[in-house]
Image: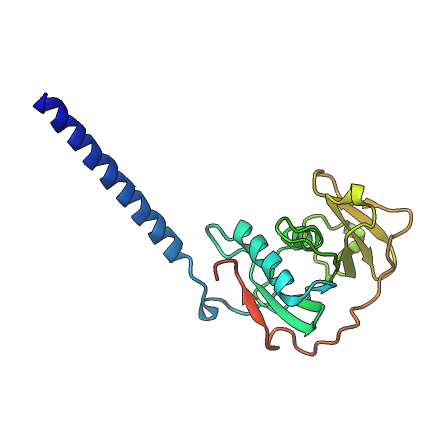
Length: 209
């Protein structure tokens, strides 16, 4: 009987030690990923996203949720959020963001998982040849990225080039963007003038706040 009790006690001790070690390792892994502006070099770009409708805290929460999904091991998404007025926010990306992630963010901000709000989300940027999902005729052009009015197309984004050619990017397809007969929205520049968005005062969002 004493042997059985000894075995049980030893087993309990091993389980407790294993749990403690696991928690310690998890805490260390989380602690390793800490954001500091001094660790990142500002990369000039003209990517912006305008969110009209929700209040600042709603947009901030949606941004934090998105960043938490993408910043598991590295800082893949760093957002600076700027409050323009009570129901309008502007997002800028002082450390850059790749085009595919940018498109996912434009879509997510209109259909957030943990937020219930109505928003009009529009993005602007100059496309590059290295951008995934950019049709070759759109390269090096200013484009406007947005979501479709058709809720059945909620798993894609649309973009219109500065010369008013519209394209659809389907997230579920590996094919190039498909040209639309007519764009849902005509290209127009952002009407919120920001002289130097990289250095304007705003709040940095990484999802690890």
